[in-house]
Image (cartoon, rainbow over all chains, first blue to last red; front, top):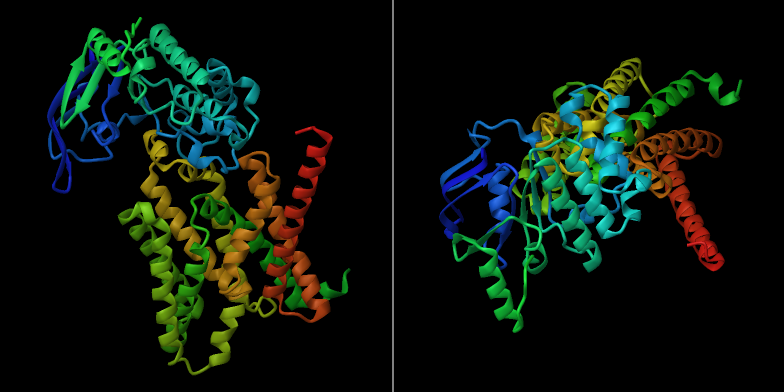
Length: 242
Length: 275
């Protein structure tokens, strides 16, 4: 299976404070990966390195077999930031406007959106079950609905990789489950590669295909059995992951 | 014909005023949504340093203001990038430098009346050169805003995602910075340096209370700005008030009324149990 993300001996530090040292892993097409670890372990930093926002102090990152320094096809990568739209709740924009904004690579510079672009935005909203809210201001939507809008914004661009940073922050428990089900469905039906940073491993483990754990500057891949045993130990009762 | 429009200087004031009322909120909405509302203040104050430098050296003071504003806007953008978590600090730094420089340079200006006219503007004393300049700049800003509408929207909403979507964020930010600087410096001459930032923020604040989408908010902002400008010019002419200050005060009054009406209507709907 082809590799979409390849990380080799990656090191990064903030000043003299090392975050991780010589970590390596690959993500294949169609993987649904959860990246877990305690606060400050560098999970979000790892995403920012993959997005080319930070420069590693050592090692290599390759996206679609291309060195990240030469990589230009960013629209192939969709990104859902931590807290999603929560910092923009007062932004006077409708769900449809926010989703359509991500169609830039298909519309082009100095050009105006056409009927086909508006239809694409509507289809993306339909995919996440938010078509009825297309004309609503984002500030009028709940945290879970805002996250669905964020997913639609990414999906409208037909990405090959979706990176999510704590997508369930500020979302109620019932909505969390439906968000995970939605992600698992996209992964299953379209082969979309998903890399998701999360704290919520007890629920996420039921949906993901691989679990990477960042801890004390190194990265290890955990089997579901290892996660089950760790969670059972932590919660002092047996926990079963599907 | 309305008596006020029989005078050539008033016809010019209306033409220039309406053009500025269309372009200032177009810049203003992006500035407000990027949470840089005080940027207009910083630029307009710095423009005074350019005006003073122009008057001292014999260069057209508007061109001096444009140059100072561009330098200040680029300075704000550069500092904002260096300290993104405290981006509003960039405005305070540039404004302090601009006010300091304007204060020092104003001491060397021989014609103090000319310098003071830039503080509060002189929309009823527009020269041919200024009218052509405002018309040209207004057309350029309008065209840029229309053609960069979706790019400016996405950058204001989420700069990181805009970059991932393929938008050349640095280039668009640079163009927008220049447009802002040019608009502020020209507006400072007409409505006054101390008033231009209010013109940038107040119509947008009014529109944000009523707009049900980004597009609607942009349209309402422009309508509000034109309404404030035209009403302000009429009121100031008949009540013999300073036009710049009158325009802004009408805007603020309108904003207060909208906020009060919103509060009353929310309470009414709550009591009726509709929300």
